[in-house]
Length: 243
Image 1 (cartoon, one colour):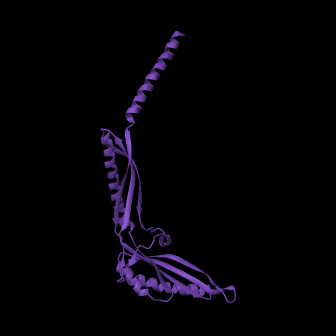
Image 2 (cartoon, helix red, strand yellow):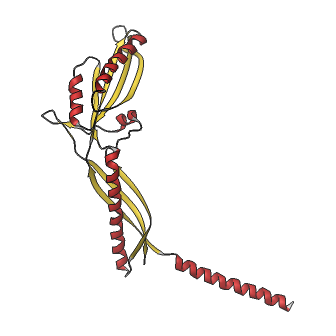
């Protein structure tokens, strides 16, 4: 019985020692940290110009209306194929068009209206201006949603560089805080970030882009398309080790 009591006491003693050792190790391996924010503000040139060309036809029957719209759009796209542009169909629908007749006090059918739209983008403003001039005044053809934007290819490296600047901005703030406590900043432990650009294009869905991206191009008194650069901002929340 006495040996059993001694053995149990020994186990309890060893367990207590191990608990103290592991607790001390845990305290030593948990670094002191500081969390700070960092920002970067810059601009990106708008390297793309886009326009939406829409064909709208009205005919007594759906077949006649759709045939007229597709024939006219085919003529437009054949011309566009000769130009340095990218094209994407963004709308194709056909429906019965009605209007309210005030004399008869009832809705009357005007016919079947078909709408076809294609988004056209180019690297050169001059190309889009030439297209606008080419189809200006053409029956059933309308131009809309003229805009300039920054392509993802141009925007991505600018965003990445701005992210680095934001992290360095956060490190500078962390260093100032640590210095006040007589310490220095160590390695970056974690970071989360958010980005924003005022007119990022979404090429995966052209129709959505035409609805979501506000028109950013303007026309000056000389008839030339002008645009300011895209505003880009990156904000980070960074956790640094304090030594």
